Image 1: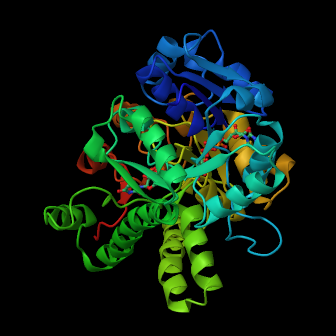
Image 2: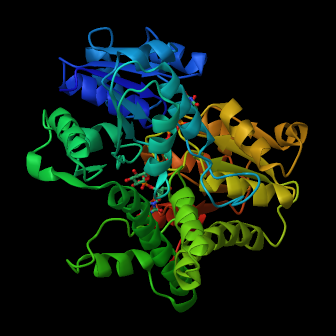
Length: 464
Ligand code: UDX
Ligand code: UDX
């Protein structure tokens, strides 16, 4: 029976997941550790609105369990030693160097974790991959643990996370399914049962699926690939709609009422972002290529190509509409996060649209209700297109949306934050340069109302 859990990695996945486990299982001690001291300090903050991850409802969950059976610290060795089960929830970014550069997942953090577990553990452990990993990573982890350990037994399970940011707490409390993959040996089955018992505290048994390890790992990658594919499919149609006079919102509704297709994930946008979609698809492409499956690789790669096209096309349309030049013009980007209700900006479309506009010498203002100025600059610096001095001089991050739009030639909606719908658009219009343009990258705003005020509005996928 699992009585003591350690989780390595206090990020967007590890933090909320462990908070919910601790909340639902008061008898299990949950210790979340991270190398990053600041992150841990933020999880331990007295002010629950200052947690490092913003998720609706997360503060309440942490408030109830923290100090009771939920602990955050940097004491990695101690937490490993005490635990019966160790979740590995460190990040697995796309490699930026060497073989597989730009495609394969960089597993160096995972390997470091495995080596650390092996060197520290003095009792048997269940080791659980929570991070999204390419197929057959469990085998590598198992190998490292077996060959470098102190003779104790390790059983490796795959338990991929399906939470979406912005709805993490709800997704964890009421998951569509929990997936647990383990080896087909008696020890593997025993480990699976132990983890099933943890989730069974709040998830109905029939929603807990058990598989072999490889199926579980591959299911996570392909679940994201299928979701991303729907967004790219609808975005591909959005361009066709613009040329033909159809309306993508109407098309989506018509498609979505077919119960075989369903209504979710059919919203046209400036392009998907987030830490998972692009990374996981690139992984799938890389794995397919490495098995010589060129057609399979090309098929999935097209999802990414379409997404890149959508972001570029959005930026190009702004330039074209503003009389083919944005040089020296002020453009206000509303939203920087990759979707609403999160402060995560990884792979956000806003970063790429901003970069394209900066290439055209525009001046950019950014407003996002949850993203800090330093995050915006870090994201731009990371692209390496410009020096950080240039980024700082061309981009200003403001904490008031009205200020951000004052005197601007155009506004671009990058994230679907609810608050954007409630702004005083009449007031914003009066303070802008004329003609005043809005490029709605999320089809969020009420177009007839804006047009009545005097705005010229562009929405994704609506032909004129
Ligand atoms: C997760 C998953 O783990 C990843 O596979 C998935 O594809 C995206 O979501 P996430 O929680 O979002 O990652 O990443 P992040 O917020 O960066 O958190 C990872 C944490 O692990 C960081 O706080 C980092 O400091 C910590 N870490 C990393 C360690 O403690 N040790 C390491 O060796 C590496
Ligand atoms: C995703 C998966 O949904 C989740 O199951 C997995 O565990 C991690 O990856 P996440 O990246 O948090 O979650 O966000 P998601 O809600 O899937 O959105 C991804 C991107 O697609 C966002 O940029 C979103 O704005 C965009 N999107 C989503 C659209 O453009 N249109 C849609 O209809 C839906």
